[in-house]
Every structure is written in C-alpha cells, then in structure tokens.
Length: 379
Ligand code: PLP
Image (cartoon, rainbow, N blue to C red; front, side, top):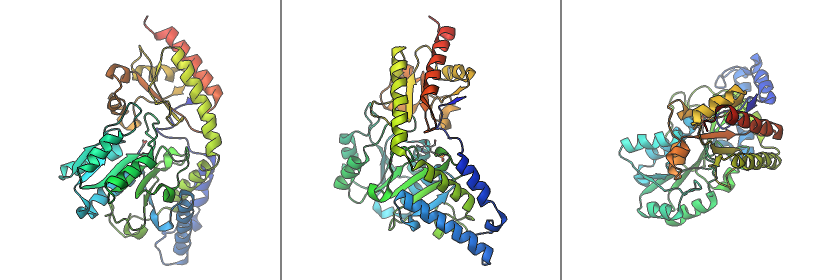
C-alpha cells in the first residue's frame, strides 16, 4: 500500500497507540474533576499533559485548551471572539481559500449581520498585499482569519509580513491562524508567531481522531462555544480526557523532532515527483515554494475521481479535493480562487505525504501512473 493522503488524515503512530493503552489504566481513569485521590491523580496527569503541550508549542499552560478537533477549535475561536468583542468592529477579513472549518464560521457570522471581507489570493495561493491593505483600510476589522499551510496546495502563508501589514493598518485586529497542516512539518512557536488564536488537529499528526487543540493568547477574551461544568477554565466544558490529550501530546512530541530532516527527505520526494509527472504531461498546481508535504497535480485526460480510483487499483491512496468536500464531488474552490482553469482543476489530485513516506514509494507511484496512462488514457 502507498498512502499519499496524509493531509486528509494520518495513521496512528506506535507511540500513540502505546500511550493510549497506558493512559486507559483504571488508576488513571477517574474523573479529573472528582475530589477523591483518584480524581486528583487524573487531574494532575491532565494538567501535566497540558503544560508539556504548551511548552512544545511555545505557549503558556493557561493558553492551551483541548478540543475534539480543529473544526471545534476554529468554531470556538472565530465565533467566540466575535461574540465577546462586539465593540472591536463588525468586520472579519479572510480569504476564500480557507478550510471549510473557517469558511462556514464566516458564513454563520455573515448571517448574523457581520461583514466578511475576502482578500484576493494570487496564483501562488498567498493573500495579495494590496487587497489586504484595501480591506483593512475600510476599517472596523475585528478579526483576521488565515491558514499557515493550505491543505489542498501546501501554499505557505507569509505570516510575518501579513501580521506586519495587519498591525500597521489596523493594530486592534486580532489574528486567528489555522495551523493544522503546518504542525510537525515546519517549526511552530506560538509566542514567536505573535498570533491571538490558533487551531491544531491531532489526527493530522499521527494521533487518533477526536482530539484537537485551541490556543488563545493570554489576555484575549472569547466566549466559549461549549457550556457546561466549566472545565478547562470555562473555555471548553466537558469532562477532560487525559487519554485524548495524552495522545495529542505523544504525537506532538514525535513530530516535533527531526522537522528539518523530514522536510528535506519529503522535499526530495516532492522534487522527484514534480519532475517525473511534468515529464509525462501532468500539470503541477502546487506553487513552487509550497510546503513539500502537499503536491497538487492535474492529470490531463483523467477527471480527479477517475485518477483516484485508477490509483486505488494499485493500492495507492490520494485525494481529490479536501476530504471534507470530496463526497460533494465539487471542483476545488481553492484552485479556482487561485485562478486555475476549471477544466484543469477538475482533473486535480492531491498527493500528501507524511514523514513516513519514502522515495521507493514515489518511484512505485510513477510506475503505476505509467501503467494507468497505458491502460486507460484515451488517445
Ligand atoms: N484546517 C485544515 C487546514 C485542515 O486541513 C483540516 C482538516 O482537513 C481542518 C482544519 C479540520 O480539522 P479536523 O478534522 O481536526 O476538524
């Protein structure tokens, strides 16, 4: 099997599996809110996991909240910020290339009467600076929502210059950053980034599904999305799960080592595939300076889904558009927004790698593409 669908989800690492078994022991399984000593033990375990997670992400312990997924983190950050900070302004800026977790929150806010202003992106998927300045310059921007690494193309946000522009034109605008596809693939240090809110997802870094993280910078006030028993400082009610938090931490520790070496290895695989696929007439849609972990390619003569199923015959797994939209059989809105022709976008396939992928797999992939061209391409 060749699994090139790691932006959709990753396989659970051995370390995470072992950690889950360890953390589901009876002696660690009491309710962290219980007053007896088993409860105290579960709470201190949970708290130490939170602290270690914060340390690795370059945050303070009280800035880290465990959620069920990055979608929940995004909903909490975006809706919660706008709900709590009504006097900060009525507008939100973003791009139309964000993940649905952000775009749907923005549609929700638009229905409530907020003004959503979309900044144009260039062919490289990056927000256009003039468009950004123009939208900020109209005033009243409470929140800016961007993504550090695009899940469909690997396009990397030039965060430093974007943040600088935001702070120079509209200093009071808060910044929410989706870091889901960046984590473990490039260094992410939250205090150095200088962002107000961030989301992360466990299942994209070899943890199990069902765990995410929300970062809220100290001093930033947001309304919680989930109300209840007041756990996690009232930010996210619901009985805390040391197992899920611990699974996230274990995965985070694993992907936080050897980031550069892995990026170099995946960079070589990416370059090889770009060269070989281009030589066969395929069109590379990921920008040249994209993160190497994502490679978006359009195969002339094959609709996206046809190529996906052809590759599946050879036990190779890829995506068409992002996993959330794939079942709706839509052409990628991300590619269209970048100015890619609809016919080319309709043939786009996303290969996405994890640090576990190898050059041998890439070579095997090319051999299979050749066989698919021989067998199925109508000349
Ligand atoms: N943001 C990006 C960039 C993603 O790729 C994804 C998942 O595809 C999400 C957010 C949502 O993550 P989750 O599945 O944890 O809700």
